[in-house]
Length: 292
Length: 173
Image (cartoon, rainbow over all chains, first blue to last red; front, top):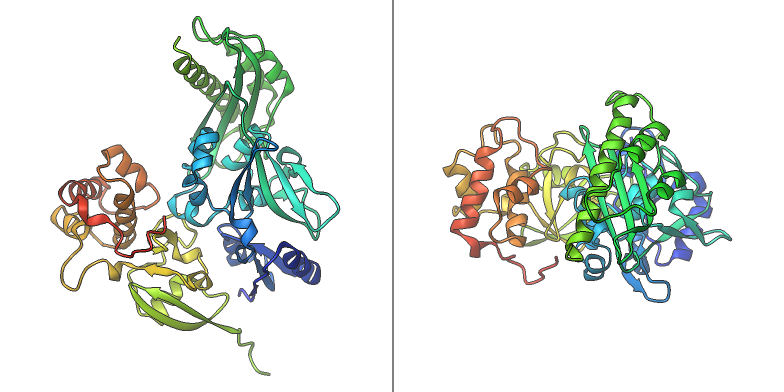
């Protein structure tokens, strides 16, 4: 039976203090969309939930012009992000992905930061955060920042150290001329495979730089510098770029396992196929905004 | 030995337009508080993992899974359940549309469907069929096959588009 009480810190320092005092018996709590289920399943039995929502500073989305990024507080919900003007304007790809996370009820309560801290291996939020080069700002230790890609270690495992909590998710705004796309295939509840691409396309229609992230397959967002480099220099105009070789490279290299929902072989195939579709969508978007 | 009695917290909130107060332990779910403390059994415990939508209530105008929302979260906020949707004996246009089009059989998913549809129509005035389908994708129905539900939502949207402004002056979202 769950037996927790809820503490209500007013500041991040208060929350860190509570965490220090209670150690493994305390859990930071915001939306609780995964935490409460884990408690109910008997996987976790905290004595104290530290309600991060009583800390006002964590509930805001701020455009940070000094670093050209959006700073998203730890208790900002998906619904709040979807209703935020800066979000929609600056990173439409993120809005697109968030609007399809979970269901409308999960989006009312759940938070991007909470999602990343839970490190669910199929997470769309993790994949798109990795794609955009997001970082997390921490409190409670002597380090301040960590890249999302370094933070997510393995299914349900993060680099968060004892006594640390996440206070902000910082998402760099993609540079001018960037275009992106995100495609996924859902299984029964979670994605089976997802691919995000972010392209920097020059005025002449050549891909100057590319970043590809494969989600839901490798236990954490999967990237490959070989794949990214293979795309640089390809043309985005004059016909759809031939991508079969890169798709084959992805299918070959990605870490995939058999599980109850799909075989490794099928997931590899999905990764390659979704990659091609995401690239086509990104290239189409670029063409449409450049009148070609 | 005395059994452990969990500490109670006073939760004051607005329930279907009425100011109410109740004491409950921090571990209590909103669903149980509504069903047991207030006798409002329209919200159902079905999957208990936030997937099916049978426990849907509106919290500050937003749909939430009451099965996985702490009662604690209601404090100072506005909770709306299916029991507050009709005005006395006058059904809400969405409820009437469900009745008219046979959009319910066992009725178990219906409160969740109606609240979700109502919130959706408050945001999107004249939705397409595809938009309605997407809006309701988080609510599962075992009986109807969904067509009648989607038809009812579209019919209600078309015939009563002015009925969906939020009653409260807060307009929270």
